[in-house]
Amino acid sequence: MDIEVKSALELFDRFLVNSCARPFVAADRLSCIVGVVIGIKPACVIDFTEFDTENMDLNVFERFLESLGLKFIYEKTELNPKFEPKFTHTYFISKKKEIAQMLVDAEQELYDHFDTDEPNSPVIKVIHRKIGRLLGYPETATDWFLIRTEKMDLGEMDDDEVYKDLQNYYHFIHSRNNADEEFEEYDQPIHEAMEKYTPLSAELLRENAGTRRWL
Image 1 (cartoon, rainbow, N blue to C red):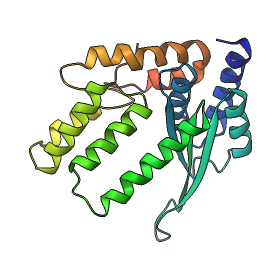
Image 2: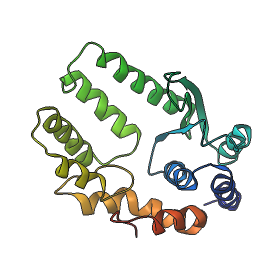
Image 3: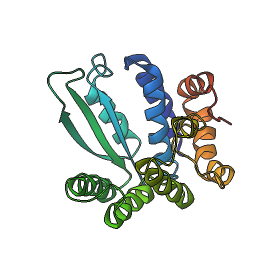
Image 4: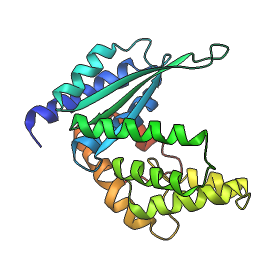
């Protein structure tokens, strides 16, 4: 990794942990960015609520992305004004602007089909697969995500099963039969890079891992 990128990551790490209202959230978001920087993820999507960023200068955040050679598309999403938070800041990030745009388009396509198609319809499954590939998730994990989603929709998974899947890993729900391979392919390289280049965020994630798997 280029020494300038290493230095930028370390500074970015300090900036996010010290300026985000919820440092653990910042650390989790940074893991996605690290995944893009080291080539594990073609793209990532990051959102911060208005509370997370009230002490964070988003212009500085964006300059850090640029210093890492990353392109981004920014969206501010208004939420229900009756509730808090009222809006979120969302970034679609990649090394190439066209890939970031592909992720924006895929997410929009998914939302559009939610209005007209069943949750487990073939067209929605195709879009989920597209999004999974853009986010760098192993195919076996996407397979399990689709199976799991259908089981939940049909009432074939109880709450204990649902929450058990959520407690094992940080970045996505790993499949039951391929979890070790998925961890080695995706999680482990990101965790190793964070230990080297973003140690503050790595420590936050490691210390708050609970039952979630770290290195």
